[in-house]
Structure formats: structure tokens, C-alpha cells
Figure 1: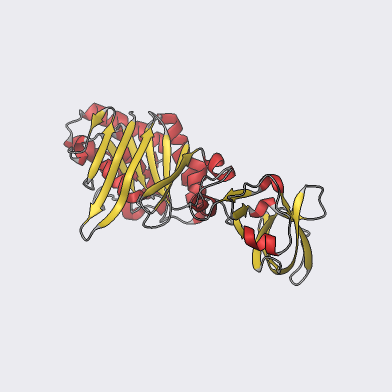
Figure 2: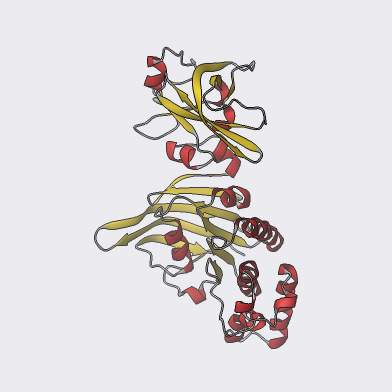
Length: 349
């Protein structure tokens, strides 16, 4: 187990392409940090640089206090779990688990002990004599995790390990990964584009955009108080509604005094908007329901508001909801408004 320190890390490619623009990140011993962001944001590139699979153009990466910029992947004492499992198809599960230990000269008794322990933790003891083509996707991913666990590395690196699984298996494996990480207390860096994985797995969440870190913090803090327009729009499902200040003014809607003058974009989450028959102090808007989506525990309502000339998304946890074509009064609670500056993209309060 070890701290991972990333200081001023940059990645340049030929053709004047910069993938990472000076990344600074401290990952504590035993912490699970999730890197999340859209495709091309640099999260997988950063993970591969920690692993030693990508060269560092500038900056420094240290694992357990040792700078590893020039160390080969095999000498960094990390274990990586990939989305495609990367199992040897001609080997049994047991052989896959022991392979890395054998080439390191680990004594047979110790190999057997580690395999038995990992197989028990992952509940794959009954699979040890099977080959990968005899396993389901979830079982293969458990084996891939087992191969990482038996090495007892300083850190685990996960590169979108659940993306090939169906929704039910992703949920099961997400719980399993979090349980194992807490049990093993191994420093872990996890890359995903899936918000649910990111929010539920992370001790701390790192939101990346265009090769830069937008915000770092506990998942709930990033959801409740996003520091930038990008984080506000990226974190949360359905995504946050954004209203131009000028449209509110043009619609003769009084903007609360709590909103700073330099604010020109006001955000509000769909679950914060309520029907105006409530007692909350709020901006009041009238609109027409265009679409209703029942999605299990929630109902998403899309309401066109003429004064804003836009559609707002509302998330309600109730069965009795307005129908399509109905006119509704909406309440936007002042306490739930998120003020931003469009030019800087930063939160103004």
C-alpha cells in the first residue's frame, strides 16, 4: 500500500497535441480515487502513465515515495485490471492466477496460500479448474481481479473494468469492488465514464475535462456544490438545468438578491424543481408539459417555459404527475439555485 503523488504531469503527442495540461493530484494510502469525465478528457491516459504504459512528457509520478517516471511497469509494484479481462485463454483460472507469481519466483506454498485466499474472497473457488471460455463475463472479471489481488501490490489501477458487463452484473461487481477495496485497504485509482460507478465507488472523485482537472472532492460535495459549469452539467442524472440570467430578466422574473451580480447562468437540478403548490420560497414559472417519462422510482417531466424559451427537466418521486399538454406552475427554490459566470465557467458563490 502506498501514497500516489502526481505533480505537474503533462502529456504531449506529435502534431502539437496536448492530452494532459499539468495534472496535480495526491492520492492517500488506502484511498479509492475515481477519475471520471467524457471520452477524450485524459483520464485513461493519466491512468496509463501511472502504470508506466504511457511515457510522461513532463512532471513527476511517485508511488510510495519513489519516483517511477523511468521505471518499467513491472517494477512499479502495481496491478492493473482491464475492461477486456486480459486472461490467458489456454490456461485454467488457477494457472492465470499463479502466472505472475511464478515468474517472480514466489515459493509454491506462498502461491497456493494467496490463490486460496483470493479465490475465497471472490467466491471463485469452484472455478479454479475451468478455462476463461467456460466463464461468464462477471466470472472472468472476478478472475481478473483475483490476479491483481494475489500480487499484493502497492496500488490497484482499474481501467473501466465493468464496461463490458450488463447493467445487473455491473451493479453486483461495483459492490464487490468496493467491498474488496475496503477489506484490502489498497490504494486504488479507478477510471470510468459511468456516473453511478463514480459516485458510489469513490472516496474522492476527480472530474476531468480536456486534459485538466475541473474539481476534486467527495462525490456528494461535487453533486451538491459543483465548482464549475462543466461539473454541474456532467455530474447528475438527469443533468442540471441551466437558465440564462437575461432570459429570467426578460421574462420579468425577479432574480433573488442572493444571486451575485456577476452571475449570468443559473443552474438548478431537476430534483430541486417542484410543482408550485408548495410552500418553498421560489422563482415561479408557468409552462406546458411536453413529455413524461416514467423511469421506475422517478418520473421525468419536460416542461416548455415560454418566458424562458426553453424546456426544463423536472424529476419527481411521485406517481400522480401532470400529463402531456397540461399547464403547470413550477417552483425553483432559491436555496437550490447554482450561480455561474459563463465567461470563466466558475461558480460565483
